[in-house]
Image (cartoon, rainbow, N blue to C red):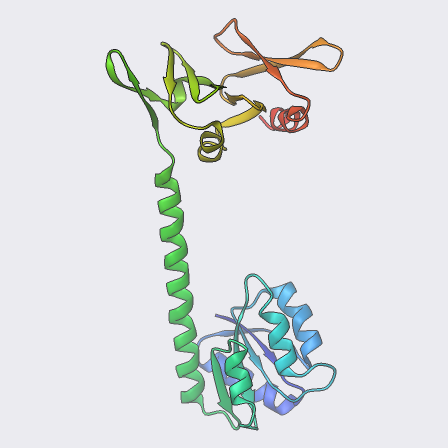
Amino acid sequence: MDILICDDEPLAVERLSRLVSQLGHEVIATAQHGKQALELVQQFEPDVILLDIQMPEMDGLTCAQHLSQMNPMPAVVFCTAYDEHALKAIQSQAKGYLLKPIAKSELETVLENVTKLTQAQMSNLEQKEIMEEKVQRQQIAAKTYRGLELIPIENIYYFLADQKYVTVRHKNGSVLIDETLKDLEQEFADRFIRIHRNALISLDYLDGLELVSSGQYQVRCRELDEKLAVSRRHLPLLRERMQNL
């Protein structure tokens, strides 16, 4: 793990650096007080900060309060010669509280616990990303007189809202679905863009933008003769997305 050491005593910094290296981690920066530590955390984004409590400029407890507002927040491990701050340290979301002189075995235990926590957080994040990927459907289901039709997302030109239903215009015609345009926009934000309060168009079939009259625009849809109106509200974002296509 990448570790930042914050202590105003050079000998303490030197000893902690040596222990960290012996345990297979890397000291990426050192600070002499809390204010400097905050600046270095933003610059280097360490996994852990070994933080003294009594320091000039800004003490460790105050520094920890500021760190708790950061995202991502490094794991804070207090390293101090005094034990009367333990309760405040716990309240500051610290992952460890070590008393000087710090034993290598104690530091090893704390860093192992932080490593396990970090791995668990990464695993949860990966699982969340996988679930989010699964949420986006590959087909739209519509009930028609022929039964249940499944329309592949890549075959859909646009969604057009009309009162309580949404028309799905696709390669083989049109169907109605009982869904909201807002939900469709959120689910397929990477594939469709809103061009009007009642319309989403596929970025894959977006063919061009043209001026109809003063301040009024419409879009051309590839493979279709139909053209859809663009509202002034959605015009700036549409132009931006088109430049990036």
